[in-house]
Length: 204
Image (cartoon, rainbow, N blue to C red; front, side, top):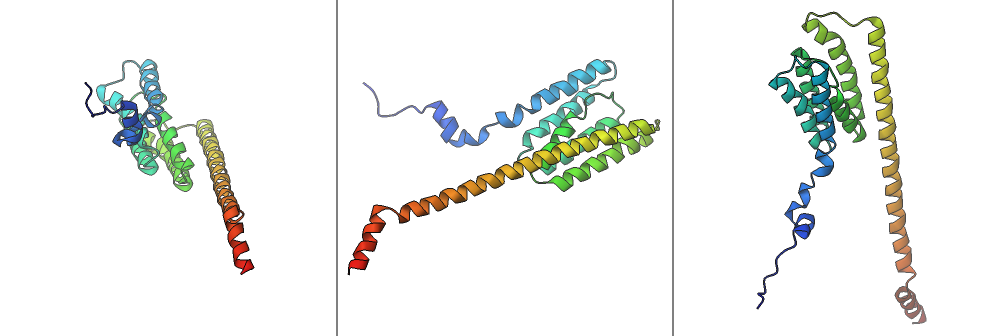
């Protein structure tokens, strides 16, 4: 004998229920390779210069990227501060910039292009000149400074291309939506019911 209670399907609950807002995979999964690359690559670059705090800082930046679509500017600021803290503490250098680059692209592609460019210029000044001065280390040579500037300019150019392509795609989608709406209006006006109504009106 079966009861009238129907057991809910877990897949339906995850798709249509309150768990639908917890689709975390598109947000979290891209950050995982960045965290692994920063920790593992930096460890192999200088295996004896790491501590628990260094590992935590290397993971904290990629972890913040999980919120990059909802809070792009806050994530950019948090990752910038995390990377700056790591550099000021004098830990071993490696691919510690991956999370900051990803945060920069996220902010630029979501319409905050001027803020992203400002962070790029500010980061160049801070990491190339102020951090060495704070550590009382040698300043970068002119070829190194020019090479890093060219590399960061290339990053900015790529970000601009991505932002322009997103804007163009959004404009085409908006145009297609308007044409679809206009087509529905024309179809409704040309329907048999509307033609019959017009015939009744004109025949009176």
